[in-house]
Length: 226
Ligand code: AMP
Image (cartoon, rainbow, N blue to C red; front, side):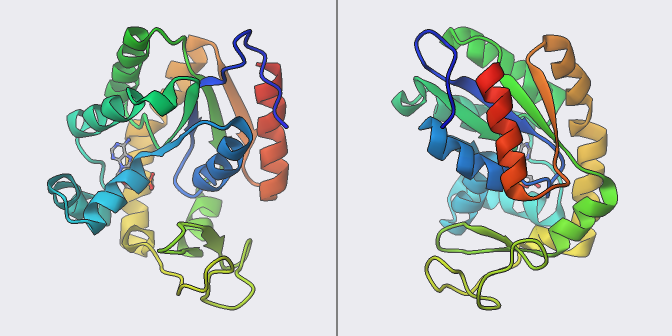
């Protein structure tokens, strides 16, 4: 169990940073179970909106499928609304946000307004070739959103979700052209956040090229100590 050090035993805001495919979603699911705070994945929010064909989803879909980034204003507004809800009072885990310096600055303002301190930022570090290998092998359950990997974490029965028997799917943006675009967006727009958060102080790194359970253990150790 994760021990929380804050006197009010609130985990506060957490941010998972790292390239697509580093395991942010997989790790976030584990960690929020332990902390009892909401998992806020901007990618999942956009995918749910696209599925329901809401104006926001329709606006974001083409950008997402090509591997580009949705505009900062749209994302910032969506996140601000989400973290203003009551369930975020004790803290929340942001997965896939912020992704640009403008978003990091916006988050700083939102947290200040909310009266929260600076987030604990954990960078899941993974090299380029491993990222490509992971993304092309990734499969997702459309029903429960569980994430598999054909080589690292395959389902018991090929193509079928262990939890609910649904047929696993490949995300449209996990195909080769979109992977290249996403990595280029990461390098140019998101990687600069590493220096930004290193300067802010509560920044930690974890080697993401290890078994998922070991990564979870490393994250727990950081949260226990921070
Ligand atoms: P993810 O599931 O985090 O890989 O996100 C999937 C896609 O959603 C990204 O490739 C972007 O098109 C969009 N997206 C998610 N989060 C953000 C964000 N913070 N800023 C801009 N676009 C985002």
